Length: 272
Ligand code: DGL
Image (cartoon, rainbow, N blue to C red; front, side, top):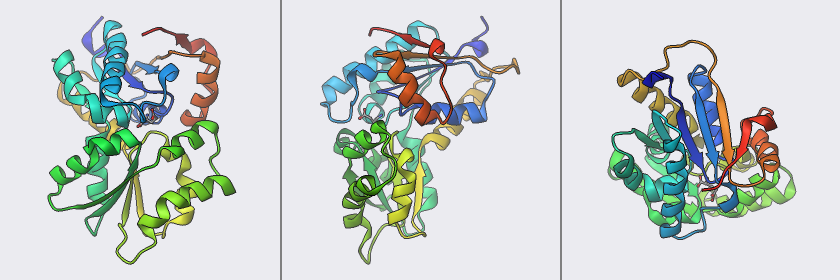
């Protein structure tokens, strides 16, 4: 098989990374894709760095063994902990994470150079967004907050309503209900774009909300274009899904994240 026909591999702790997959499909509908969701071990966001690094290496190894031309870490928590290790381990395979592209989108959006980042406990604890934002715009102000409960709300499909809005408000009001509030909210977790409506409802309309799915997809496109690895065949690409737990549950929650029905026969149960 020609190198350009090899699939792009993506992994996440669960179904959240499907938002990145969807953004890649919109830009490059002819690419073949492999997606692995480590649903048996979700969430990664409350685990220790050593455990997250081990899980990330196992998930990535599975995809690399199937032969891929580029690896996307479609999980903020895994990116914050394992990106340099995975790059070293699988060199020269290009490895793209979601943090740098998300930070770049936030720097573009904030006019006051004051950004709020919400993510899992592990991502905030590693300081990965804070570092990426400072690297891109030295002196930028960053207010960060772990919001682990929002992952559970999204998984449960509680995307609106009183309970959902009150949890979102409890996390965000202390950041945004003051004079010197940030003017940009960076959704540093794959699950948070699903909660866009309740988030928008409590924020001032001029706060810009950014997530990394679209900018990560653009990075993938740029990387493949610059290395001559964009698939030449113009036919629609094939997508295969792997999960480490119940495929039916993967299809159910996955369809919510993808915004389209996932066929059960495209999902295979695997062991890492
Ligand atoms: N995929 C994770 C992230 O983007 C959220 C879910 C988890 O904690 O595993 O950080």
